[in-house]
Image (cartoon, rainbow, N blue to C red; front, top):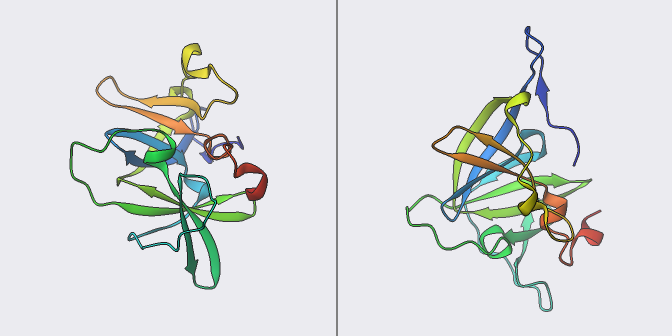
Length: 159
């Protein structure tokens, strides 16, 4: 995972900026520097033979983007609270992808020292998609590694 976008702070503990969103009832976040834009949901064109978490492709101002259903990819349950679904268009290397999420929580600024590593049990498996945890006692945010999330059949193509 590339370094998070940090804003220097006078006291030496930089602030990072994250784009926070909901998948099911859980709150996730990615580095704000990966986010290109946030769109209203659109119906993608299905692609036969694509992994099940790929809803299809969109033509966005001349660029063809895969649409990834994060709820399906992360095996999350449907949300219990109704939110406004969105597409988060992100950079993954030199390519863009659209992530279908259940709602946007907003831009969050956290001190880098407040980002904690995930517990070891979360790291079990080939490649963990959760690279950090942040937030308060009432609500934690899970920081996603997009390459790891997409490693189930698309990572090589997304390079």
